[in-house]
Length: 124
Image 1 (spheres, rainbow, N blue to C red):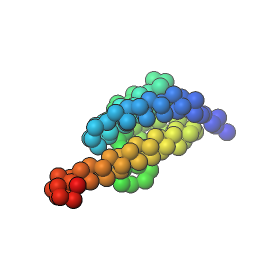
Image 2 (tube, one colour):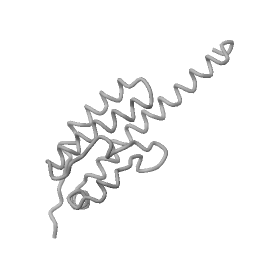
Image 3 (cartoon, rainbow, N blue to C red):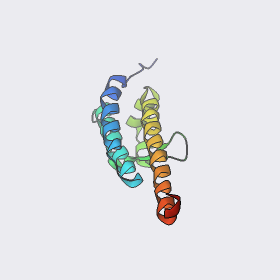
Image 4 (cartoon, helix red, strand yellow):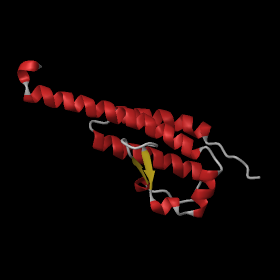
């Protein structure tokens, strides 16, 4: 039987960093970029050099659950597949993505409201 690994303590450290970085984003593009950067760094530390992780290996997908996508390169790496299947890594990535998605949707809604006020100043 494989030993189950947990990255929960590392998740706590990165949860705060992710929140801080996302709170400083000015638009959805910046939010997506910060999500990829912070979560890739989390994965690098979690995987401890077993697998090379680039920022481009994880992307926010705010419209489709689990709200993130992983690169085919990463999904095809045997080391990643083993760690992912024997740990809470995918659950943590989903929690990070849900936080980023909520911020994304909020930012998107706020931006569309601003556009309305610009187009219809008498309604503002």
